[in-house]
Length: 127
Image 1 (tube, rainbow, N blue to C red):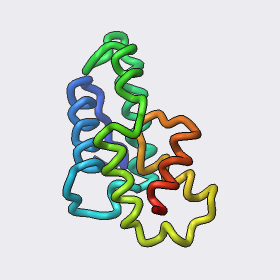
Image 2: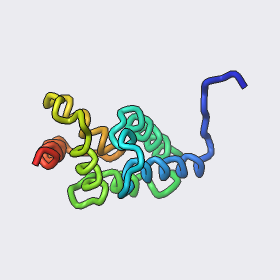
Image 3: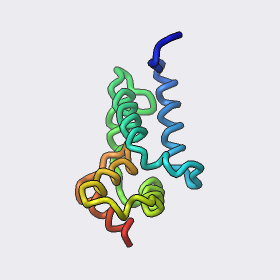
C-alpha cells in the first residue's frame, strides 16, 4: 500500500470514529492537551459529522436529531469541558480577539455555536 489516504466508508465505522473523537476532545480528564483545541481535529470532526448527517439514513439519529444535538448551549457538559481546556491553553493570552473566536470554535467543534455564545465562551475563559 503506497497511498497516503485513509478511507472510512462504513457508516458504523464513521459513527465509531465520531464517538472516539468526541471522547478524546471532551473527556473529563485529558491526556493530551493539544487534542481538545486542535484546529485540525476540529476540522476533521466537523467534516465527519457532515458525512454522518448527509447519509440517506443518518446513523446515530435522524437529520433533525443530529441538528438538535449539534446545538451548543452553556448547560452542556462539553461547554464546561471546552472552557476548562481553553483556560489551560497556554497560547490563549497571546491571541487577538478574532483568533480567540477561531480558537473558541475549535474548542467547541463539532457543535454549532451562535455568535453571542462564542462571545460568552471567551468571557468565561477570561474570568
